[in-house]
Structure formats: structure tokens, C-alpha cells
Length: 161
Image (cartoon, rainbow, N blue to C red):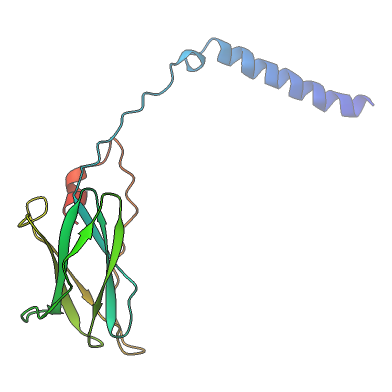
């Protein structure tokens, strides 16, 4: 009984010493951390590629205000020859526009035109993608991290993408 009691006594004394030492520290008297809200810029229209296929690619559009838009696409370096119909977007609505008639293993560009706005936030909404490559072909991948906007974030970096 003596041998099992002694380790527990030392443990209890050690904990008491830690709490007593912390009672006089400034750590226990600190105020809660101040949270600073990061301002996320309001962009009328956001887009991202989705639903890749062997002869198609989807373009998902998310509007933050009422808009009327049209998507155009074509082979990179050539005139854009395909267009969607004009369609409406409501605030908070997402719409996937299928870009069809694509050739495999080719680079494409696309542009989103918004009626009444020659450009979005100072630049036309354009992008590029590459359709499915042949099996066993090589390619490079770029990965972008999930952005968590906080006080250490430079919002201008994310406005470029």
C-alpha cells in the first residue's frame, strides 16, 4: 500500500505546484484574443471549371447580383466560334454552362460576357483549360490552396485569380 500511495502523492503535489505557480502569472489574467473580420471583396460573378468530359467541359457560374450572361469558347489561339445562349442569373444562384463540341487533347479559352458590363471588376472574365489527354501521356498540375481569409491575407492576391 505504501508503494502505490507514494507516486499518487507526488503527482498530486506536482499538480498543486503547477496551479500555484500559474495563479500569479499574467497568462491567467489575459483578456480574450481580439478577432478582426477580414473583408471579402464582393465580386458580381465567380466562375470555375467543372464536369470535364472527353468532348465537353462545364463552367459553373455563381452570381452575387442579377445578371444576364453568355459563355463563348474556342481553341486557344484561334477565333472563338461557339457561344451559349444568353441566360439570366439571380443572386446566390449557381448555373453550370456546358461547353460542348470539344476535341480531345487540345487547349481552349473561354470568355464570359455580361450584358451591360463590358468587364467584371476591371477585367474580362476569361480563362483556359485543356481537354482530356491520351492515356499515359504526361502533364503538369498546379494546386491552389483553400484560401481562409484572415488578418494576414492580402486580398489582392486572390483578386488576380
